Structure formats: C-alpha cells, structure tokens
Length: 73
Image (cartoon, rainbow, N blue to C red):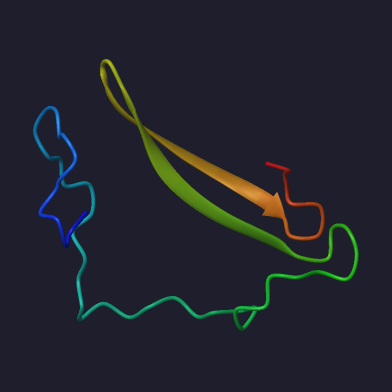
C-alpha cells in the first residue's frame, strides 16, 4: 500500500494515550524475555491495555499464566 500511495480511512480524531518519558528508568525484565513455562502456575505475566467505548476509554489490566496462556486474574 505504501508503494502505491494508498492509506486506510481514519475516522474521528487521533487520541494520544501514552506520553513516554525517556529519562525515566525502565522496569527490570525479571524473566529475561523467556515467556515459556515448564508447568502451570510457574510463570505469570501481566499487561494492561485500553479499549475505546462510546463514553470514552476503559483501561483493562490482566494476569496471564504463561504455560496455559489463559487469563488468571
């Protein structure tokens, strides 16, 4: 698409949800980017995201069991 000069349609205004700070220290990577677990409940990872709704944004946080790849909390 880029080579042909095509772009997708964007509706609404762009909303910036994150303002990064390059001077802030990054959290430690406690699993060294190894997201495979030998058994259930050996490694849980977490993340958060946001979902756009009609009334605004909703932030969602969750915990995932790396072995089963299922949300546990």
